[in-house]
Image (cartoon, rainbow, N blue to C red):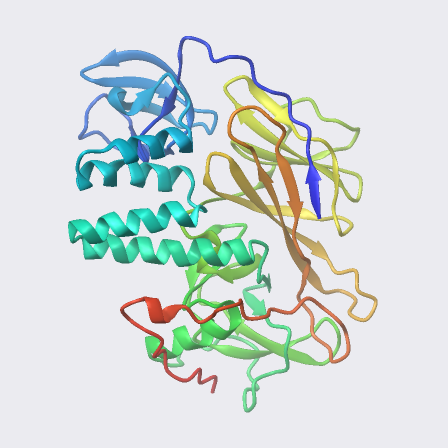
Length: 401
């Protein structure tokens, strides 16, 4: 389902406004290249600038990042993909072409054609390490194009819940600290059939963490009986276990309930903030996303969640024109009362003017019961793609004992 959201267009940029034109700009506490880094801004980020000193300029961003950045990495004109690619086409050397293609890839990290061009020039320059990283980025972008909204495995009290029966021979229900950790090949093999990836990540109220699936357990199911789960080695109370490619290169920020920094749209609204985004919920199902710019907070129009009482857990984004929000909610399936469910929403702003779009993702359930229909993960078309990487596909057998 694709919903067109209304968004008030911002006024023309004032004289103190600049845009990041490099792939990344490190923001430092003092006007010195040796000063502490207090934040990083991506290409396309809008900033307000002040004093300039020794080639560095004081800046502030809507995301709350304030400090000093290199003035030469900022521009008055908002970057665009077409302009970046034109500079790459006009480059007179492979190294200059690499610079503009790296910026184009940072600006449009989901554009597989741009990433493919970058990989080609990296190979031409003989930088195999950078080409390998770019190849991984290409595979992640391809996977997100096929399935941006999952798979998601709900997390409940440090357990990642799987929609399947308990693993044969496993009876323990909690993590055992004295159990030896299996070989890395086995850990990757366990992850791959769950998420088409050798790594999994938890997105929770504490942020983003890589997780190792080293202890399968037999958990009590909210549907009655038991179900398979993994006891996570790093504490996470709520959220979802996701494939690493879903959030690779993203900035992940947990949302916390706070007093609204803007005028709310209905009496009794609950507001969850992680600047530069906030989610406002009105009643049981209505919510809207707010975006912070240099002009202040601007809301999209109200949307309806697929579940009552949904709570936003975190948002993540890979560029300045797109954000994804992870929600959790109590289950609504009659066959499985008391379970937890998770789902994603994605907002995308077009280049230039125009209204953003908002897409609703599938709802993934945390309980398991035979005959109780739920969203299940299906391997993505063309998987596995590990044959395109130097480490290959020899991941070992996914032993769960």
